[in-house]
Image (cartoon, rainbow, N blue to C red; front, side, top):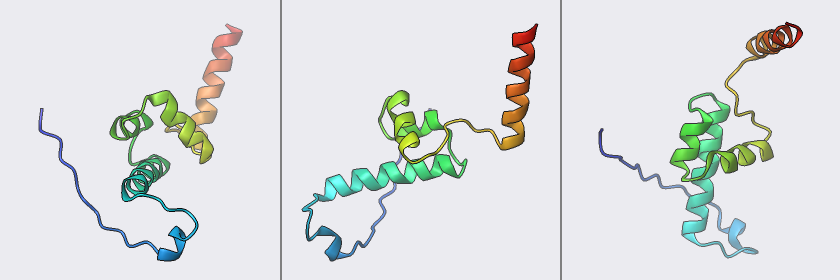
Length: 94
């Protein structure tokens, strides 16, 4: 198993965003990391389980975060979802 690596990314944020809320750099960094991982799931680049692991969160908590952003943890497009629902209904009728 290879050693875990981290990439540092510098982001400039407008000072005006901090006038009414004195956030710490660690707080902003943590929020940006979580939002980036949420976006990776939204773009289907990462599964929710891996994103939760990288966010150092339990999967259930990460799924809740996805829900607040209206992102499904399921990696199915509309046609795949309809087939799965149909298969489930067929099993229920059997």
